[in-house]
Image 1 (tube, helix red, strand yellow):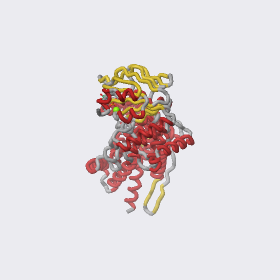
Image 2 (cartoon, chains in turn blue, cyan):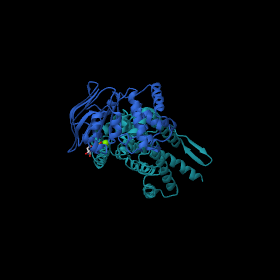
Image 3 (cartoon, rainbow over the protein chains, first blue to last red):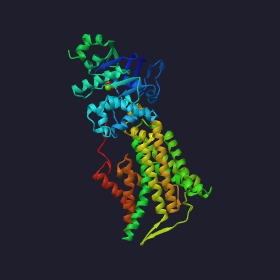
Image 4 (cartoon, rainbow over the protein chains, first blue to last red):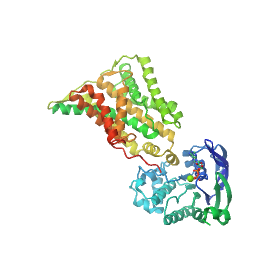
Length: 234
Length: 292
Ligand SMILES: Nc1ncnc2c1ncn2[C@@H]1O[C@H](COP(=O)(O)OP(=O)(O)O)[C@@H](O)[C@H]1O
Ligand SMILES: [Mg+2]
């Protein structure tokens, strides 16, 4: 469904991604784990068109999307929940969700998706008219995810959804990610929290300083000694 | 007392002109963090477009106003595309200097074509004065108030209710996040320039009508004042610009009314300095926005 082939990304003279190739199949949860600065965010940004790789090709459902502007990539069904949520803190919860369906002109469709999102995140429904900036961290993550779901993605890109959340909330967020996947959305989730990510994913890639150093099924990766040492605390 | 009310009305009329110009300053600053020093010259171009439409083509005032607004919105979009867009990822000083360059370009191109001398803006309709007690309100004041408040209401509607407005707010807040919603940042920036420039053009036409005189450098002082108004209200904050414009207009009118009209321009700067000391982010300004 989504394929990255030998992607290279530079920030000035920094070679951030060095020939990344990954593949995500329809219906899967795939996780990309790696330490801070490994290049996880850069991979997601390349996919969603926020940055342009210097070389390599990204294909989605057989079509090349490298160099396609971000707003057109959303239209194809790739929604990206960025690192740090990046909700519109100057707007209400409702307005944030509405923006998630920016490309939909049919009001009835927007309403239907809104109900859907409120069903999945009842706490957002309660806080509908609240300013998004006043939400707690966990609620902001839910809003960011709900906002992406308003675009009814075929594939959802999640950048460190557990960042800065209390363990109980992390649990809840990963539960929701699993549910979203079960409802038919393919998921690529980037995490430093390898344990949680590996527990819900089918496939995993391990990233170190811009290179994939290990890949395989989630079990294989989880049982690798190196990964255990570096990411699973033992 | 009558004099005070009289001055207050003049001040509100003048203030709503500042407000119209300040809105464009603040919207552009909000979206690309550029202080568009050419904005006052768009106001001047608007006045000249209407001047030619009325005096040569004998168009009625309102038609000239609307065409001048449309022409300037196009001009604003072109200026952004040609002069500012290529510099979007450069440092801010580069863009600021370019804006000053664009300002000179507009002023002296206009001067080349129309000569530097002031032109008489044609009186396009009969004046009536309304007298209430001893207060005389000219129909010009009323027209300025009606048109500028109508435009501000339309702007409020656009910003809060339409897709264009929502994308403007989203892009101002976070460009990357806005793009991830499917918002076209370039189009949104163009729309911002179009709307801001059309408001400046309206202000120019209204001032031409009000004072009956226009010239190619007429945009410099009001542009500066409107910039001050935008800062007073909180740069980047739309209601702040309207508010700042009105405060500045009324203050100036009261100072003139008290017999110190020579100090009128100085007062604007005094108000600016006071605001910057008391509340550097402007009256409606929040504390520095934190980005996560
Ligand atoms: N905008 C940027 N400018 C310069 N360097 C950057 C930028 N964004 C990321 N980098 C660098 O690229 C590398 C990968 O960053 P990133 O993709 O954010 O990693 P991760 O998400 O895994 O923490 C890091 O070394 C980081 O410092
Ligand atoms: Mg990251």
